[in-house]
Length: 165
Image (cartoon, rainbow, N blue to C red; front, side):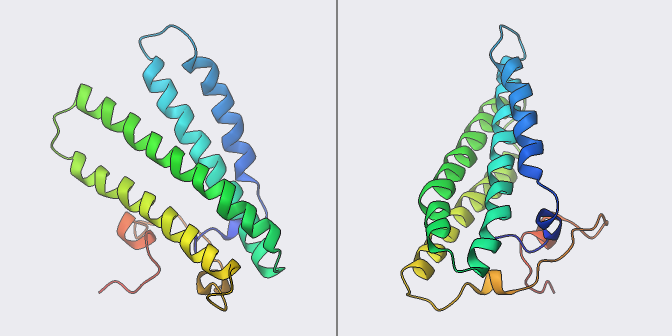
């Protein structure tokens, strides 16, 4: 549940990524030496499109206490997002190992694994809220922050809003 995605309340990035995915789907379906690369890129765009769609729908549904929309996100969208994340992970690993030495892949393995674990946690937290096991989702109570381009925006700084000492 993103903290630095304030812009998604005014700009539909899901449509942008969906359009890009359709474009690469055409490339991925052909007979080309680059077919696997295009397929991976298409999967990444499908993942980003769905991730943005969830981000665009989640906060308004939560703020309006729309349990039907929250259930749809939890039961349909987040499991599909997890499948796409796992597909990106597998496709990228296959390409990496075909073209590179295995050294360095462990960093990407951790990032993909962390992303997949965060999706599972989001499903668990959302389910707990829907079922009344927790009174609120603190992640969605906080004000969304603008994402600025800065040399300080490193993976470790944007992966968590927690203090970094």
